[in-house]
Length: 204
Image (cartoon, rainbow, N blue to C red; front, top):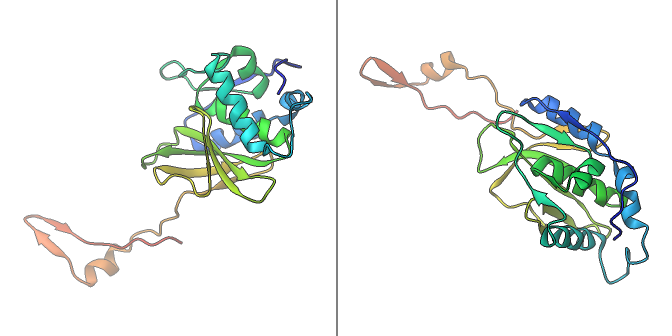
């Protein structure tokens, strides 16, 4: 894969809510900024699946320190387009996921950025890439290492939204409001001055 740039791209500040993060990915995910990476003669051989080529490209970039994982400053979240990340030579998880997804899409692969976290909780503080390769295989790509898996995502990765240029699919589980009157009518355990009710809150 070639290494020159056509345009420099841009960055934008991102709020810490999921809606703005989805908006940022949809704005910054620009395969045209990295289409030139597929223009060299060594791109798509029959023995080299496109997703594997992209993983090898990123591994080489990290090995030579042409691309590095660098945190944003504390209390600042600024996400960048693919060309700007390549131009800077560094980015954090969101920048690298946007870059990787754009390179994959420029190569003809159905890829999306997934926003979520590692280990659970409500914070949407990590990003990675998921998609379908040219053979119909699902894949998971962690761009900060970089590491590629075919098949299901690792269990420790908790998705909140799947984003591409066309849509943002909210993957967070929906919870029904707790009907405390109904639950307490079915029985509760009284402990001291407080009451503890066991509830099963099912997905909508």
